[in-house]
Length: 204
Image 1 (cartoon, rainbow, N blue to C red):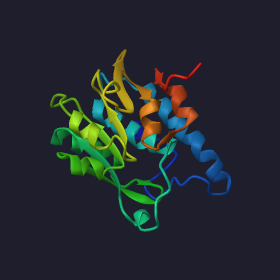
Image 2: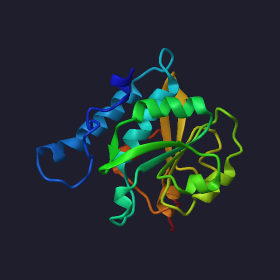
Image 3: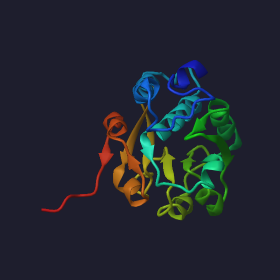
Image 4: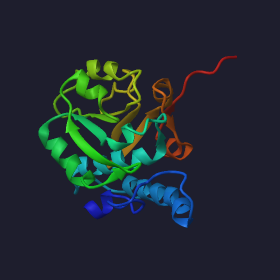
């Protein structure tokens, strides 16, 4: 399962840092895109749903541009916060453990408060223990945090990426307006893979 759930673009020792020279740097976005395409073809009827979603979470980080951070921030772990039951946290951690984002080691942490939510770089809000997480979304609305959820109202509440199961496969829609308001830039490649993209209405 893990061989399918992780993309071939970045191994545990890889940096995934954009902008580096060399053929490997030019090919990395293509491998990352291939990884997402492979994930989109995986049926979760016979696989663990949250292992597939964990792999999506990891791959999303390659197609999102966060605002420039200071040198001190680059020494800190890249935090994927999970607001959900411990079983979901463990499944996600098992897939992502040992990987890096922009040379920073990934730390998967369970989120139970608004302070912990604000300390995340990616915040996944699981629907496993019910909804009612509006306070967490509100806490990071203006922070540089990519919010990912799976409830039907997630986008309406200001969430950025919403998972859905369609024909037994994991798909996602994107609220581009919410991401841009948080200072995050989502690549055109990821937008094309989304089932729907919500953009800010254009003026006349």
